[in-house]
Length: 437
Ligand code: ASP
Ligand code: MG
Image (cartoon, rainbow, N blue to C red):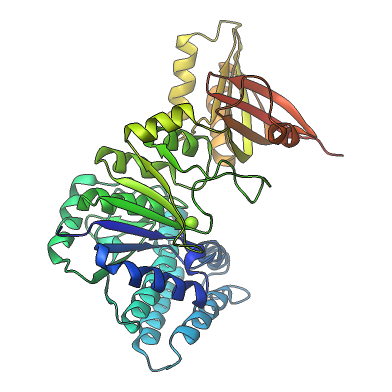
């Protein structure tokens, strides 16, 4: 066994404070013998904070109101002061240097919001990994910090950058030869850069899982573990549903289905690079690291379990818009009309979470985005009448029971108006409007 075998992904919650970083180091130090590398997100809610910082700078120029950056600096300093009681530790200078760079990028007069976003928000991950890598070293683990902006090569589609797989693989692959037993590379999730090294990019919110899959694919690793604050992949979000069960093992395709409908535990783009190379994915609890993970792979076992032993999964997506489109001339909603509408959606990057057609109407449900909705209205309204509803929920029950709604389903539907209900053999979907009491 040579080279890197396992990629561990640690999300924001797993590095949200000093105790969490210590726990990460415990997990890592017990597993360094497995030839691992780490992909780490920004600490806690840093990405959200940086989005606000950016907004403040763009509104207020060099002197934003309320010193928003200070809160981010103090948050990280609080974590460092516990992990590195000696203030002369070099991590302080390294992190101060990153904050200086961040400030100068914030002050730039960049007309393109998305470009400015990627250039600044990426510092959440750069700072977090600098701290984690230094802490692992302080714990006696031989760690090396890597800059994902030089490794994950993307196009210039800021905030939703597409990976140039060939160039990315060319840059990442040599890490296997540079790897030696006991060494741990630490790299940022979520961020990348253009091939010329001039621009930073990001892969989309919650994109760190995808980064782990990119590294695993390019390194031909055997396994990715996503370390979470839940015990594995659950059949519903425990923040929303009181009774949940863990899914012990599922297939890649079932995991893609769940992610597609909005299960937030795995970023939807994560599975494909793993499936393509037969790399196993585990979802494991960082709070209880010795408990069994959920295993996602392409084995016959996983496929038959996903088929025959599936429990209903409940997935909710908020902030949905339902657009209903019908031809003004009363022609049918035929292939010609559908083609015009789909081409427009494609151009506007509107991704349909649910669709329904009838003779005269096509309904599309998608994540609310003001610009996309306006774009759709202005481009279609000469030919079609377009109506829309806002503030809806999409509720998906995967592997619903044919004999009727479960108590969980019934409870969720209470005080909601059903606008659309649609089912296939395996999946039932509702578009719902909350009823105000
Ligand atoms: N820090 C980024 C975010 O919060 C990426 C990630 O955590 O996956 O979206
Ligand atoms: Mg996350």
